Length: 466
Image (cartoon, rainbow, N blue to C red; front, side):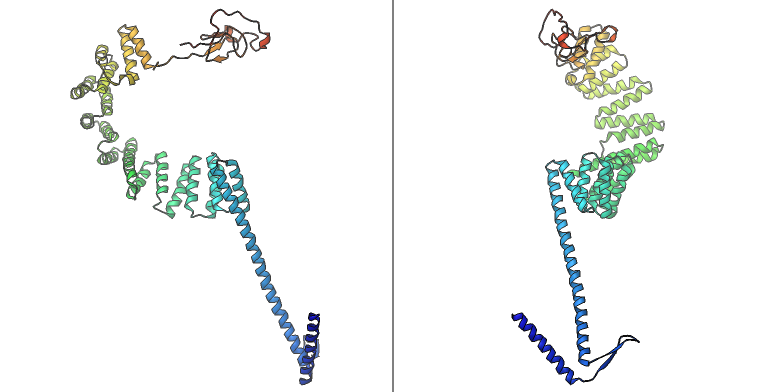
C-alpha cells in the first residue's frame, strides 16, 4: 500500500512539475532527425527526453561494466577452483608416489595434466616416474614439454639430461647440460654431470677442462681430494690418447703434469717409459722404471720391467732385478711369489720349486700359487701333492653336489631318490647318465599310474654325491 501511494505521489509530482515548467516556457521547438523528418516539441519535453536518453546511456554503460566484471569474477572463480583441484591432484600424486603406489601416482598426475597441460611440476614428477620405470621416451617427451613452458628452469633441464643419459643419447644430454651452464655458468651439479658424461665418452680434454674449473670452486674439504685425484687421472688419459695418436711430446707434458701433482701415480711413470721405448731409448726407460720402483716399491713396475726384459730376450736382467729387490726385503712373500712365477714362466722348474715351496704367508689366498705348485709337483712326479694343490687352487672347501638326472625323462634333481618325481619310474636317477641313441626311453611321458614298477636294489633315501 505504501509503495502504491508513493508511486501515485511521484507521478502526481512529476505531472505538476511538468505542467508548471511548461507554463513558464511556452512555445515550441522544431526538432529535425533527418532532412525529411521533423517535429515540434515543447522545451520542457525536449529537456525531459534528453535527460531520459542520458539516463538510458548511463544505465547501459554501467550495465556493460557490471556484466564484464561479473564475467571476469566468474572466470577467476572458475580458474581458482580448477587450480585448487589440480593442486589437490598433484599433492595426492606426490603422496602416492612417496608411498610406492606408482600406478596410482601416474594416474593422478595425468588427470592433473589433463586439466592443466602446462603445469611444470606435474610434468616433472610424471616424467621422473616414467624414467624410474625405464620408459625414457615418455620421460623425455614430458620434460621437453616442461622445458618449452619454462625454458630457463634449471631443474627441468637437469631431469631432461638424466632422461637422455638413460636413453644413451649422450650427445643430447650434453646439450641439455650446456643450456644450464649458459643460464648459470657455475652450476656445480651441471658441471659434474657434464664431466662424468665426457669421461663416459672418453672426451678427456674437455673433461680435464671442466675438472680444472671444479677444483677452483668452493667444494667441501671432504670432496677436494677425490676431485684432485680425478684431475690427475684425466691428465693421464689425455696424455695416453695423445701418445696413441702419435704425439709423444705433448703426451709427455701431461704425464709429467700428473706426476707433479701426485708423485705416486704409477700410470704416468709407465707412460713416460712407453714414450722412451717408442723413441728407441729403452735403457733410459729401464733406468726410470728402476728408480720409480726404488721410490714406490710397487710390484706393477716390476711386472712392466719383466715384460720389457723378456721382449728384449734378457731374462737374466729381470731375474737380477727381482733378486736385488728380495735382498732389500727378503721376507716379502709377494716378491718371492713373483720371482718363483718368473722361474716357472722360464721353465726353470727346480728354481721355481725352491722359491715357491718356502713361501710363508698369503699363499692360501693366491690361487695362482697353488696352480703353479700343482704343475711343479706334476713335473716332479709327486701326484698326491699335485692333487692337493689343485684342490686348493679350485677352492674345494665344501663338497661339490653333482645333480642327478633321470635316464628316462631327463629330469634333474639335487637329491637322489629311488623314484623319479616326474615320470614316476624307479631306479632311473644317476650321477653319470647316458641314453642309447641320445633319446629318452619310450613311454617316458606316460601316466605314472601305468608305469611298470622296477625293483630297486640298494639305498632308497636321498643322499648327496661328491
